[in-house]
Image 1: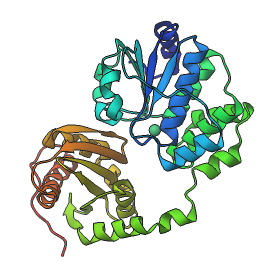
Image 2: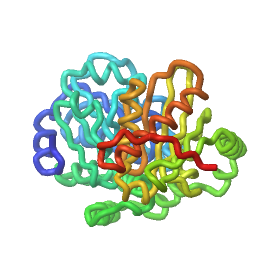
Image 3: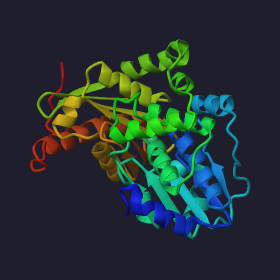
Image 4: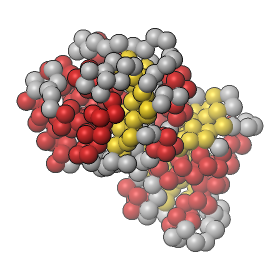
Amino acid sequence: MYTSIQGFSEAFKNVVSGASSALIVTHANADPDAVASAILAYRILEFLGSRGCIGFPEGVSKVSRSLLDSLKIDFEACGELRGFKACIIVDASNPVQLGEYRDACLSAPLKVLVDHHEPGVLEGLADLRLIDQSASSTSELMVSLVESLGFKLSSSDSTLAASGIIFDSRRFSHASLRTFNIMAKLLEWGCDYGIAVEAVTPKKGEFEDVSRRVALFKALSRLRVEKACRDLILAVTHIGSFESDIANMLVSLGSDIAAVIAYREEAARVSVRVSRRALEAGVKASTITAYIASKYGGEGGGHEAAAMAHIKVEGDVESLTDNIVRSLQGKIGRICQGGSSSGGESKGLR
Ligand SMILES: [Mn+2]
């Protein structure tokens, strides 16, 4: 596995050059980072004389759609899903995230992964991988790759890549010297910074969307709140959609570990966010989702502060929610005590 661009770039060039057909795929409902990374992978293949097409599982997010349209980004979407010589996976760590492209990707003889999430199942399946959790975004890694291969992006591709970086770094809340160097490079290549920022800034009306507000209050009405690890607040609830938004809101309201379950027949997504306090106590969102995935059967992945688990579900969502509360209380207790004691005794908030 490569953690830096040197080395990876050479190896990538060697294995991918001339590949007659490659599938480029990313996580479902692709956000601007995922979309920009996929487009950059497409341009890189073109530069190396290979042919690729892009598969966006379940399509792209609303924000990504308007970016692709306004910047008039062109690429070939995949038609028939067979016979790929290579699969290039960007910004995803687990097969479940690849949706309808999963089998076509995993059956390709050559699999390449570029990602900045905590390593998941795909790490072990990829023949060549660049995983760098210190990167603000996968777009940042892809721009470095473009640079090290020695070509330039067009101005619209540069704007798209900048949007990916701005979006995933939460407007540079997580950024490094490299992030800013890469941004400088994109500006040199003609990135329109104003457009890039504007595109990923939530519009006022988005927060006022009635279905989102209703979801928030439903989620609050079903909220279970418990203390874990002395004074960390664990908040767990379930909802049909907007689970990630709601998990973010629960942390901004003061909870330390928020887990929001989105239930779909026999399967569920659990979105987890943790506060700075939780991180200081050693409780990471990616550890929580890995634990949930192993306990319920599924896949978990993400970052220290934000992560998602996809699990299989039996029974009703109310008992699943209760069950998750109890097991997380125990797990968090064990993490805080350095993984020794069983923890988990109930200390309900009244
Ligand atoms: Mn990303």
